[in-house]
Image 1 (cartoon, rainbow, N blue to C red):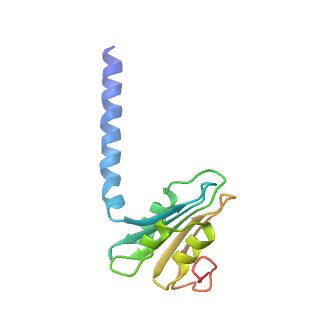
Image 2: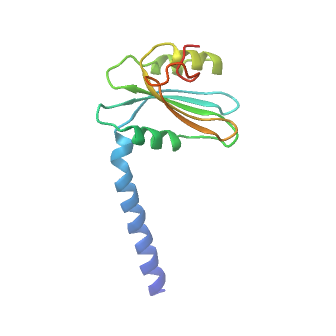
Length: 136
């Protein structure tokens, strides 16, 4: 019984430490809007502060809610820039949601996990012709 309590205590402390270490990175991003269709395809619009790193954005995208075999895309917008969050919340189709997030030139990065599991992380300024960065 004593070993069980010690092991349980260590697991709790380790879990709390892990959450505490992850918390600041997650707090630097703000969910501005989201879309989810009946097939569980998802698009998120997220804002980030000036000091956020590309790696932190990629990590955020990788941990976004995803249903296996379905598409998830996370569009990152700089804090203070025009972002389509409100319009994304009211989109009625995947096509409309995609048009909303690609309709301007303010998206900075895009992370996508496709239905086949392939992951992409694109810097739109470096790849403006990429299909995830172009207007729909």
